[in-house]
Length: 193
Image 1 (cartoon, rainbow, N blue to C red):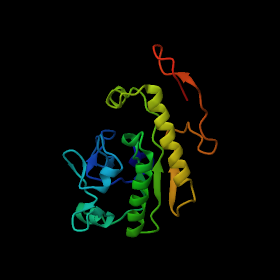
Image 2: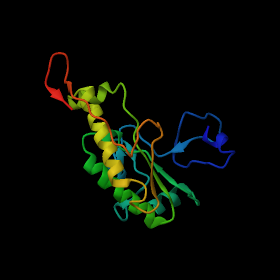
Image 3: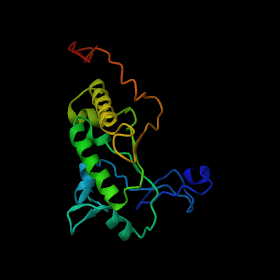
Image 4: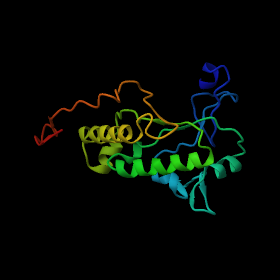
């Protein structure tokens, strides 16, 4: 899709192949893994059983140059980071980790634009609510807090060549989030905001 819409000019890189395009030319390539946290990209294993291809074992750090060399890539015009879904409830570590990743990307080339995708609103995350023993309302509050933290930390211009993108286009990063006080559930009338 991205390849065709860009007239063949937008080519993604990565060891993972998305399912959006089935043809060999213009496949959506990426380095995303189910269950990965921001911290996972700063360690040897992104998730259980998935080796982090950005992790340089010689330095013990995220290393874009190491990734580019080992994956056989020679050109990189921009980096898009879509991280944070698995960091709900711990946005401080997500922000700190993203700051480290961005600095490592800019060590490779300070002119590379880094586009941070504000994570999409979550829907139907029964696994997350069960794992954390929380409600969907609490999950959405964590989501809003994480996105707000991204906006505070990375609002356009705060860090050179770092940009925010809201791919779902329904959040206004300039006017914050409205709040609502509601009962936790029909059985638990404790109010949460």
